Structure formats: structure tokens, C-alpha cells
Amino acid sequence: MTRTGRFEKVSLPQFMADVKKIYGFKYTDEEIEKAWDDLKLPRRATSGSAGYDFYAPFPFTLTPGETITIPTGIRAKINPGWWLGCFPRSGLGFKYRLRLENTVGIIDSDFFQSDNEGHIFARLTYDKPDGNPPLSIQRGGAYMQAIFIPHGITYDDDATETRNGGFGSTDKK
Image (cartoon, rainbow, N blue to C red; front, side, top):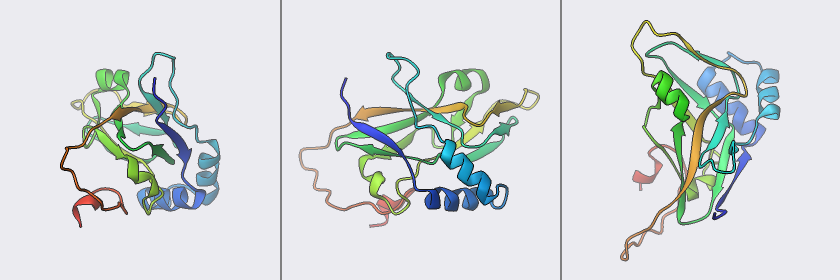
């Protein structure tokens, strides 16, 4: 296996700003700081696991058709030539049709140095019809997995720009 990346927490000020941006005043500064202190870095459950589980910084419950945005508090340092693919955990996708809004989250190797510290967000939708039971994830519960994946470039690739931003930032040049 190739070691190609490392997970880190974003800074507390970045996490606090992003949680407030998403959730408004749902959580106090003390609750946000406690969540940041308790954040678990993504990890594999077994030596044969491909995916690194992400853990919820706050509990959440979704009813069928609902969507939630989660500031994970995590960033990933990724070697050039690799990217990080984010997916719902297999069991949650199978049982609840939990899905990421963009189907697959693509975290590029240069996102780590972005102006938001490379803070990874997840937007999940519980995509089952009404009448199904709610999906609840406790604080610290795994809800998403990420896999380091190699990629190539064309022989005539001449990209030299650098990233500064998240969603949609690379097409603004």
C-alpha cells in the first residue's frame, strides 16, 4: 500500500466560523469548541478497509427527503497525483439510500492550502420515500468514508494555476 496522505483538523477559528455559517446560532461557542476538541480523525476500521470513516461532530437526524450539510472539521494533505473520494458509508447507502448531494466528493491535492484551510464539508440526503423511519447519527458516529485514489494527467497538460477556494473555484480563472 502507498502512503499518500494525512488527515488533520482545521483550526478552531475556521471550524467555529464554518459551523456558525451552516447552523447559525444552533450551537454555542462552548459546544462548538467541545465538538472540535472531541473530533476524531478519519480512520479505517480494519486493515483491509479501503475507506477512512468520517465521524459526526454533532448528532443529526434526517427524515426521508431531508438534506444536511456537515462541516467535518477535517482537511486532508494529499500527495500530488492523488485525490480523495468521499462516499456515504456503504451500509447507510444500502439501508437508507443515504447519498452525497454531488454523488462523489472530489478533494483535490491542492485543496489543503485553500483559503478555508481545505475544510471538507459533506452534504448528505436521505433519499428514501416518505414513511420510512428517521436516520439518526450520534455525535462521533461514522456517516461518510473517503478513499485515496491515484489519477493521471494528459501528456500535453499545462495547468499552472493554484487553487484558492472550494466549490466552483477552479472554473473562475
